Length: 244
Image (cartoon, rainbow, N blue to C red; front, side, top):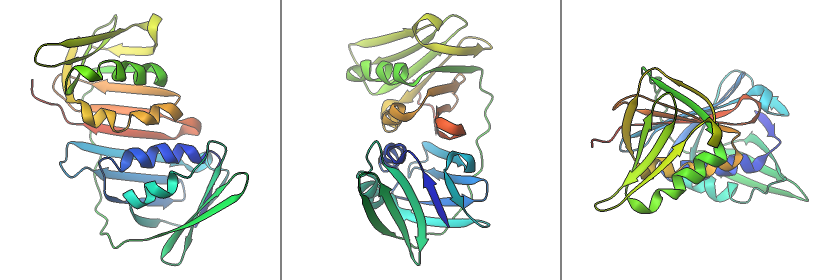
């Protein structure tokens, strides 16, 4: 197994986000692409990531190859990825060989761990809100409401998407419209739901390497948040709702 990805820093942001909630996991290399799916220990968040074969400049995978890794240790390695580095991953015995190619080569060997793989099914929820917006707008909006409290609330109707946070005495509100960053919006009827801020914030840096962010939710239902990356790749988190 050997794959080459042109923008190694994209994986740096992704693995950095994973380590905030996931201690270990299994990357699955298949002939059609790379998949990673995991639950956080509290089962509040499910992560689903996919990089299609065509997003790689080189892709040599026969059948299915499971690569179980310690995510925290992996994040230490990917921290070394520069913005102009390409990334090469290949199996080397009982280790994953990781090479960053830029001005010079940096090679790391990450040991495979003993981890039983358990298939995690897809979450199918009836989302009544489906909004796409520029990733930079999403990141800025979420950060703007951070100081107030520990929630991220979402409200939507046909005219706008509202992000809000509230504490014991204060409340912050961001209103987004097609004029202020919404690319597309489909709202069947007005909806409102609340989530824990920390689970959205953990992956917010991925906005720096995503083109757009897709937000899907319904009243008191899980939030599906998808960072849409280049060449058909994506990183999705499902976050369970929080009681008001």
